[in-house]
Image (cartoon, rainbow, N blue to C red; front, side, top):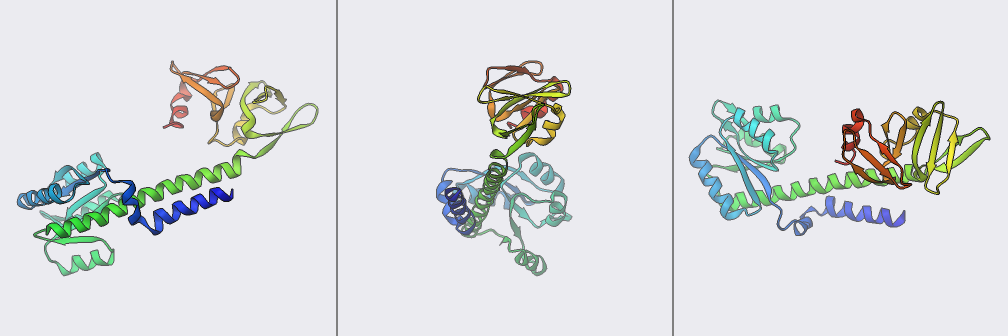
Length: 277
């Protein structure tokens, strides 16, 4: 566990404290970018700057009003939006209110308006004054990319921490299995599968032994962690880490490590497959 914690600390330091270093890891990544601007001349100017000065930006669309911008952003899911504050009779803030919560970076583009600029500064967001200066847009873009990459690294860290906790608190967990003779204590990850038999449950282990538990399968479905165990059929609960393959069919069939082949109930297939997406 010491080495795992050291590794986690390194990732945390790398992704949170020093995000500027991560650029070296993503040298060829393209970041989807949308321009929201109602002045065609300004759009052409921004496009030219992006093409010439911002090679990591991939332009995926342009919108000139709130409605088209909303639809484009929902459809394309951009990493970055270059956003004019005044859009015909509306403002960018009305658009952002419709899109909340915001999961992309924003660089505002505006004519001088001290109240809007003050609000943007307080939010520590970037803005550019029209006409857009190429060097300023390039600098703002680099800052935005650092934030995007750091956010991505933080998400990866969250997944890592979740997995570490799952293994720390679940993988080595032992349960007491009641039988007619008493109790058998087993580690949950030694379970390959459970099969219902009336009020009893047959528990098949990786050492090829079988325990006849004096509890029904529903109790084991509730007891065992759902991140590892799934009830693929009314009579079968399987450890997904002990699966060897899934074969397509009406519901499909799983082959387990002990060689058993178990049909997946068609009504449970979609939820089952979501575990691997």
